[in-house]
Image (cartoon, helix red, strand yellow):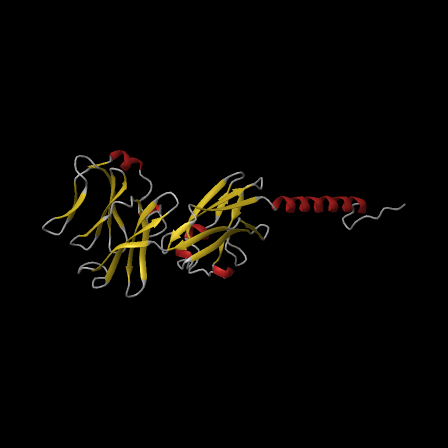
Length: 308
C-alpha cells in the first residue's frame, strides 16, 4: 500500500498522529482549566446596618500549575461582582471597580491572593432586605469566567438612641452646611454594638456609618459636642472597660482610646472654653497596643473606619 506524503514531505500517518497528539493536549489543557482558578467570597458577618461598609473578602487561588496574569481584555474587567436584591432584581454598579480590581494581577503557581472591597461604595445596597452576591474572575488566556459560590447578607437598621444637628463653623471646608450626628445600637446574636452615623439630612447624603465597638445595654453612652462641633462619645464596652471616640464633621474617626474604670468612673466633661475632655479612669495600655477593631482610616476603603 502506498503512503501519501503531506505537503511538508512527511508521511500522512505521521501528520495524523501529531494532529491527534496536539488535539489531546488541547483537550487536557482545557479540562485542567476547568478548575485551575479557585475563587472564594466571604463576608465577616451576615447582618449589616444601612450605610455601613459591607466589606467582601475575595480569595483567588492559582491551581493552574503555572504563573497566571489576570488583566482586563476584550472589553471585560478581570474581576467583577454580581449582586441581586429582593425578588432577584439585579443591582447595578454605581461606579467603576476600585483601583485594586482594575490593575492587572500576577499570581504565582499555587499562590492564594486576597483582596477586600466595600460593596457599599460600589453598589446601592443600603435599602433594607437580603442581598445575594457572587464574584467572578475573567481569565483572558482562555476567555473564560470562574465563579465563587453565592453568599448572602442582610441590611437592616439600628435603633437610634441619640441625635444632634450642628453647623459647620467658618474657616472649615463646607462652612455653613449642617451635619447630623446619630448614635444607634444594633443587637447581634452574641452582643450589642454602638454605631455612629454622620449625615446631611437636607441633601440625604450619609457621610459615614460605622461601629464604635461593643456596648453594654445597661450603660447609656455619653455624647458631647465641643466648640469645633466635633462629637465626643464615651461608652461602656464591658464591665469596668470603656471606649472613647472623637468624630469629625464628615464622619472621620479622629481619636479612639480604651480606658479602665479605677477609683472613679470615666466621664466626659465640658471645659469653660468649650473643649471636651475625659475625666476619671485610666488608659488601658494593653488594649491600646492590641486593639484592631477600629483601625486607621488608611486601612479601610476610602473614608470609613473598619466595622465590627
